Length: 292
Image (cartoon, rainbow, N blue to C red; front, side):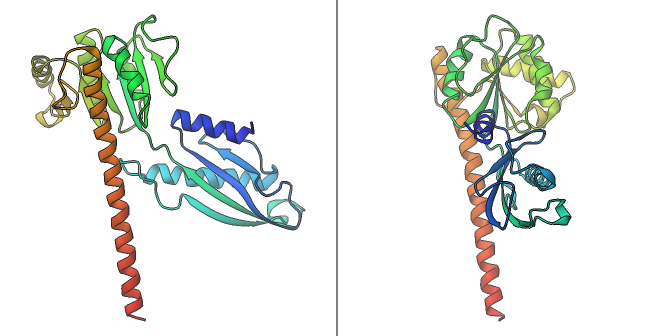
């Protein structure tokens, strides 16, 4: 398997943004042929389009595009403008290459578009839930403080993390993550809840438990100085309303349904924004033609 293709598969599995640079046209001599590709991430590059100053400039430009898409991408993960570009490079003195030809490079940026979901706890519900989430278009990280609780064989695409103090992992999570807290200890659940609220950028914060547990957590958070608006981000019990049951799989299905609703709503917002942009563009075109 080609290095760039293997790297692309890994980036997709890990929900990592990347840029793909391809030679799409040539005139005269060139160190590599049409179809040659290089994959660029924030810190790495895979394969080659010929090396030299051309490749150096290509990698630098790909990272600029990648940074622009990531910075300007809204919370719903819609791609920013300018994610695809075609650039011509003359292979002359300006690039320090003497081939004398011209290369056309296609830049394509693929931003991470799976909603990050972080599951804390590998008990009965966690073990029922994670395989369900692994089949959905989300990026799952599974965290537990106990060495022997995370399965040795994880579902494909799921990242397992052993963290002695699970709340410490919250700092490493992606922005707009969906947090599903279901550890073996209420004190750990509360510490995780505080860590997520302190970050202030969750797309969803759910804690397993009863209505009574949710009420007690809200009271404890209020005592610790959290405002009512902040406390309202906590959902306990969590899961899709209307799906009842106390068996681990029943609870897991309710939570998975809630996750589905979250990413489907995000996709709906993206589609609406795209349609608005199209309508604006069409209106602008009509107005421009009217004034010609």
